[in-house]
Length: 365
Image (cartoon, rainbow, N blue to C red; front, top):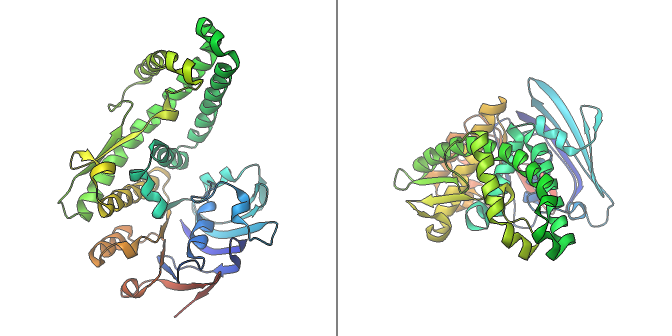
């Protein structure tokens, strides 16, 4: 897919900006704090997902305004499409002239992969960041994944509420929890099955990319901590049931469901050792970047559309050899790259350049 036009109005510090990006490389430069990341963020929101920087809508709106608006005209699934999103207390979406019930309708239409300094959380932070990686990626390529996850989390929430409501009485009344546990196992097995299939392919692709980035000097690999082999649904259900049974006593103490897909993790290793503990800052950045590049390839294979690539403050941390590798790997995908100093990237002689200053965006020569 390709973005043809993109506009932002009263989005964070951007009062009004309209860009007509290049089909391939778009360099967005300026000093820190001028609004480069805000432009990248506004593009990402067109996927229908939450911001990668904020969960509250009010944080996305210019401080003296009541609402923000972003618009995109883009080519996807063989035709030109348009989307307008208003952001106030909630997000309102009009897709191709039709008002949608939820911004999630964009998941079937607009595809993007974003890498920002926060993406390092995939390697450096806790399990929730790695689960988010899986959930966002699978929601893009498996139309029913987000719905299954939503129903699963609702069942977990109901079980948690019952634990808190019954307190000590729950110990001798396990049967009250069976309907919610059965729902968790039924839905959870589908989630695990999707994750196993995806992780197997993503790990292989990311390992190959990292091998190229490191010139074969290092090996990067990862797997699912729940189970590593691609099992059938019955085996997954049995293992989920066993895990819930094992955690029953501890769940009673903390009044919280501690076992299930909502608590699973990815095990990431660099040269056979924990990448979070033993990887350098540069190695961790390369690991996260390899995952994101692999994710882009997975989306393209699954939906037949090349996602837009959003690289926020990435290239400045890489030497020219690795910058060249990334641009060559991306090929003819549309990419937006933010940086403070574009001189190195400009030597590639491709695409358009946009300068951002105090929330104003202007295409330069």
